[in-house]
Image 1: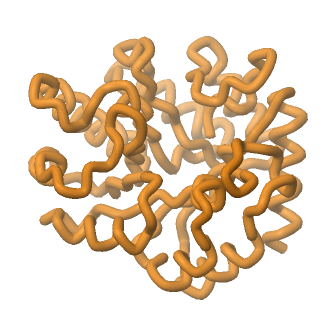
Image 2 (image 1 turned 90 degrees about the vertical axis):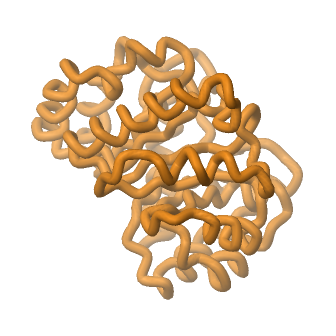
Length: 257
């Protein structure tokens, strides 16, 4: 996840590295990563390179220079701005359409919309169906991340007319909420198109990988059974960004062998 290779003096995971985003690509290449998930936040959203047409060439070039793909854009913007708000409907549609269009240009396949905080999933609110179904038709998956159980979210997805919707599944968040992530993936994982990797104790906060209760090996096995071909994105804990992110990467590499 973008931002986890920029030293910030502690755990500030959702900060977009406005000054260091290019440096992160070179670091990611050096450390053996294959992809980055771009972060689109509310703070300075109109200066984020992914929303600016005149910056797309720079993004494409650095991906080519480093052989690091951008597999997804995580629209954390909607954690601070309600996706349901009638007064913001026009702006929300503008931002989503702009992201989809620019993602198509750079060859990015997944737009992740976190349904947390001000956009917490409202199962019976049909306005989100109406908004998403009116967006530009692009060759991009629109994926939702939510704290709701996967069995319920799978049913909720059926309300969309589009067939390019799915779920970004966070293994750490699921275990933190006390869900049986292995069973969830075995039973309903066909809608999962992207995976965030973090670790938590049941009922606890994010910790270094291997220090929580997440069953990564079993989760990866369940995803293999589903012929999962999406990305595994480290959204893991760190204090010293580069050192701890490398440690988390090596931990997952050992499990995936």
